[in-house]
Image 1 (cartoon, rainbow, N blue to C red):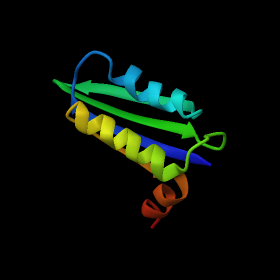
Image 2: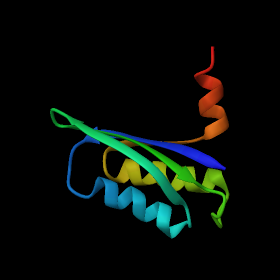
Image 3: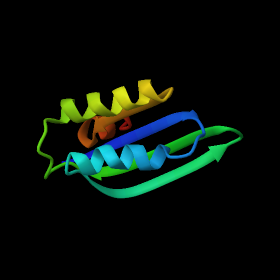
Length: 89
């Protein structure tokens, strides 16, 4: 299963490292990353393979969301099927 992880917030050192660290700790493989800085705002979209993860997807999503709260970021993890359904007309 793949997941879409989005991160938005004020730019600071280490955002990508912290998010990818949680992925690594939960055996989630990062497939693709795109990020940009718009003025002082950090924006990232990450596609990750969660099929080998040892935790339930909701646990992973909660861990990422908590990381966001601790760092004043908005972090969402969404199952790829839900993401595709939301963006299908």
